[in-house]
Image (cartoon, rainbow, N blue to C red; front, side, top):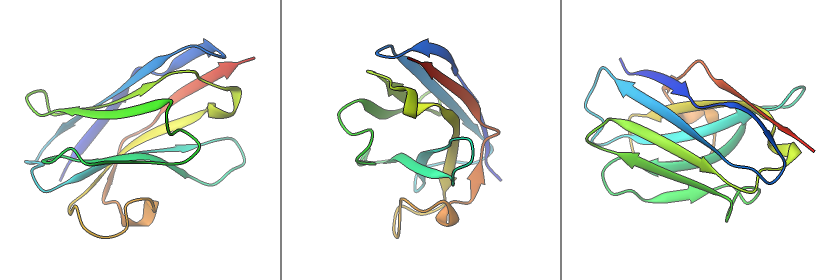
Length: 125
């Protein structure tokens, strides 16, 4: 089992920045893929970004490319999502997730095995 705990959410004005953290525990994550998804009110869960734990290969949704950066700190077993130039449409609950393989589809929530409880991000105009 992998336990994921998100933190760092909050309220910010449009154009501002937030950094989300996801602390992972319970298993060695060497061959894992980590991801961030979000769910806005009344919408489906949406892919945001993903990173492979070992090689650090990243992939982003078009809606956040150039504004968000996913990274990981192996020593701290933590994944980060740096969010800059935030927009009101980024308002959502953000979820950290882990998949026990770096292969296969990376942007579908059904492919991931473990999920955090979520952290709220609210961007006001």
